[in-house]
Length: 110
Image 1 (tube, rainbow, N blue to C red):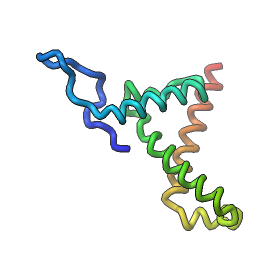
Image 2 (image 1 turned 120 degrees about the horizontal axis):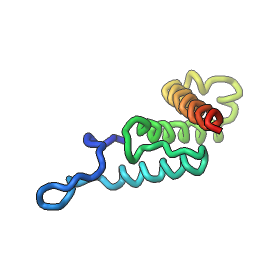
Image 3 (image 1 turned 180 degrees about the vertical axis):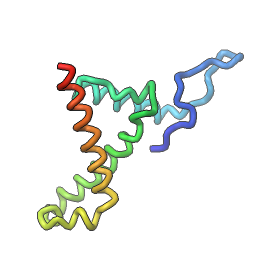
């Protein structure tokens, strides 16, 4: 998903209205933050910062790889998924690293 160029909260113009926003992006950010709160006990802060917004795209890519892997388990067992779906596999590695970092932060904070 493409991030909006201006990631700041809504700022009113002189007419009292904010700049038009793609609410699909903001709904996705909200959902992602809620999932972070529920699953990790910590928001991913995608509503307030664009720092972790790339994880939204990673989630979609990892889901595609998991779907393919579930349908063709022999590809995973043979190790061909790494070669055949290398771009998705790299995205999965990034997602796993992000998830591990969040879990480490959470467990360190108690």
